[in-house]
Image (cartoon, rainbow, N blue to C red; front, side, top):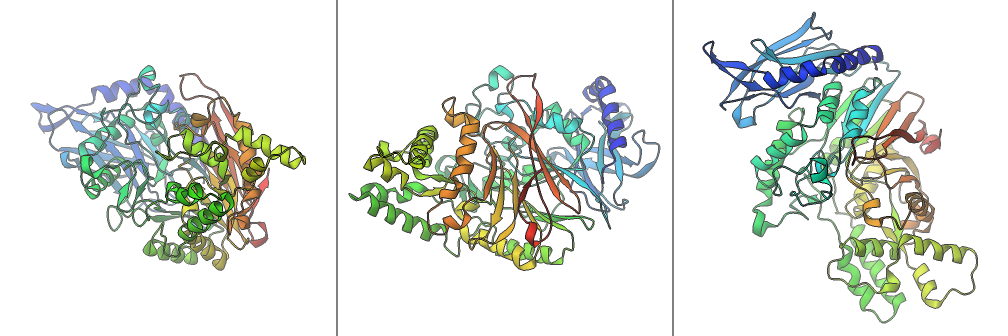
Length: 601
C-alpha cells in the first residue's frame, strides 16, 4: 500500500516550504461578508484526515473568523501535491457551534490512492495534508504506526515528529489518551513550565469550553500537526479524553459534588473529541467502534473498552480486610484469593458490552482477511506481579489510601528479586517470614485492564479461537511497551498482543526512580510471569515475552500475508529539544493455528 517515493517528495516539500506555509497560516484571512469588509480567518491548527475507507476519507481543519460567527470554506482534493489534477472539491461552513472545526467526508475516491487536500477562502489557503484510501483485493503489505498516551505538559512530541518524517507509513492508529484532562498542577506536569508547556486552561477540564480549549492547545503543537498532515488517522478514545479511569457511569477523577453530573461531562468530552478528531459519525456520538478493511490482508476492528459498557474497576483495597485482619497469614491469603477471584471472574462483568461483542463476532466471522487486528485501549494479556511487589508499588504511588500494609507484605522489586534468587539457589538461611512472602501469589498489576475482567477477555479469545482467526491485539494505556502470547484460561494459544509505549506520559520509571534499573524491572516482570498462582492464573503463566518500562516511543506494524512484524521505536528523552531515536525491539507472529505466538526476528 505504501507509495514511498510520493510521500518522501511530499514531506520534503513540506520541509522546504515550511517557513512560507507558517507565514501564510499566520496571515490567512477570508471574506465572510463582502469585498469591502473581509473577515480575517486563521487556520492555526493545521489539517488532518482520518477514517479512510476504499472510496472515502474524512478531511479536517479549523477556520476561526476574527469576529466569531460562521464562515464559508472551500476544500479541494487532488491526486498531485501541486493541485494540478483536482479529483474532488466543494464548500462547507466553519460553524461557531462546532468550535469552527470543519469535517468533510469526501466520497467517490479511488481505492489505494494517495490524495492531497487543502481548505480555502478566496485567495487564502490552509496548509496541505496528504491522505490515502484503503486498498481492495490482494494486498502485499500495509504499514501501520501505533500511538498512545500523548500528555502535552509531560514532554515534547518527538514521537510524532519521528513518525511524520518517515516515508514508509500508510495509516496512523491512535489508541487513546490523545489529550489529558488534569489541571496545570496535575499528573506529569513537574517540568511543564520549564519546557513552556503548562496546560491550558489551568483548571481540570470539565465543561465543553474546557475540553475545546485543551484540544486547541494540543493541536497547536507543530509535531502533532505534522503527523496529522502526513498520515490519515484511525483513532479511539481511552479514559483521559474524559477523566482518569472512566467507566460506564463515572470515573476515578470525577467528583459529582464539585464537578457535576458525570453524564454531562462525558457528553461534553465526546462532543469535543469528535469536533477535533477526523472521525466519521457512527450511530450515536458515544459509539466509536468500527472496522477498516485493507483488502484481503487485514481487518482492523477498533473497539471501545471505556465508555459504552465498562463495569466499575475493582480495587484491591476492598479485599485487604481479609488479608490483613486475619491472625493466620495463610488463612488471610486464602480468603483474599477466594474473594478476589470470585469477583474478577464473575460471568456478568463487562468491558465491551453485549452489543459491541456481538458486532465484533459478526465482523470477524464475515472477514476473509488473513489477519484480524483489534485496536483497543488496555492490555489484554495477563501481567501479574508478586503480591509483595505490587503492594509496594501501590503504597509508593499512594494508591492504597489510608490502608497500612505491614512491611513484610510490601517490597521493592529489587529486594524481591534478591529474595527469589536466594530461594532458587537453595539458601538454607531463609526465614519463615521470607518463605511466607515468597509463598504469596502473583496477582494482576492493573485491574483497569482486561486483567480486571476475566470473563470478558475469555469471550473475545474464545470467539477468535472458535472462528479460527489469526488474532493480533493492539494496546496502549500503560505508557510502557509489552508483547505477549494470548492464551485462553485453558492454555490454548489464540494470538498475540503488541502494546505501544507512550508519546510522552511517563511509565514505571516515574514510580521506581533510580533504585531499580529498567532492564532489571523488565526481566523481573517477564521472569516472574511463570509464578502466577491464583486460581486460573497459572494457566496464563509465561505469556509475557517483552517489556520496556522506561522509554517513550511508537510502534510500527508491517503486515504481509506471511507475518506481522512489530518494531518498537524509542526516543531517549521528551524533556529536551534534542533527542536520539532508536529501534528497541522487533518481534513477529505468523499465520495459522500452529503459529499464533511471538517469534524472534
